[in-house]
Length: 224
Length: 108
Image (cartoon, rainbow over all chains, first blue to last red; front, side, top):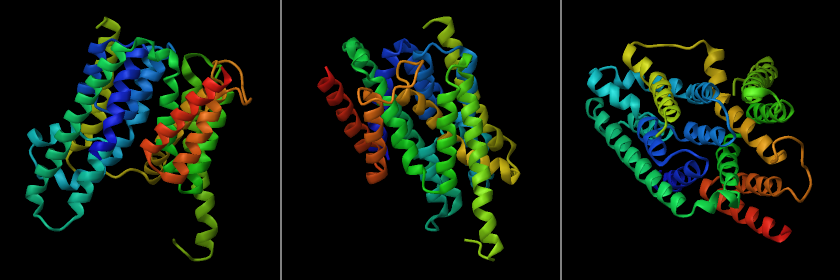
């Protein structure tokens, strides 16, 4: 997991600097926001000259999934004091959720000690993300012409690499196709409204498709 | 760091932290209505695809370019194939980047 995150921190730092964000702001973002996909999307939007409000709104939408993670981990952290819950919440990312959730499900240790594991894995990922961003920033600064090489394609490739493995079910595929189609058609709308509209339509298409898929099955009495 | 950047980073940090901490802070069992939980599942796929599709199909930002001289489209298709075949992020990125640059160089 750590090794997998290495190139992203570096790519993020490099792209952020070449998209016009200052080195300080890039590092501050990695240190304070600590949300890989939202950070990537934000710098993509910055590069295309998007306004502040839309970037913040997109951050909200993209990170809403963390609400699901915290709901799922809540039973395991409820016994902890706020002094524990605060940093654990701050460090809750896709990766740390995956690691912590798996560890909480394994029966080999009492629940009382498991937050140390959660804490440790968070700390490792956090420092890793920050150091890699720093490396990326330095790299981006020493090779400023990298922006003209079409490094924006790195973002396209990264997102495709994240999305395609998620398309395991038909409703997911429907959601992606609907969102992509609307995004292209509505691209001309101001303030990146096309992005919002496309995301919304994609989510609704996914829900609708899921209902359609599950209906014939329940008619046959199967619940797989 | 400009004022604009401070607002940007602080805003993103606040929003992200609020989302992550609200339920932990409340501490009691919270249940979502099923369709909200269902909808949240589709958010990452929908948002990321909505960003990628125009970047691939209309790289100049205004009109569709479905020709072979569109390196973003060719590289993107390669990325999709690689991602579907290996399900490995690093393989996808490196393979697609190499293809993208090779395609650009070949086109001149």
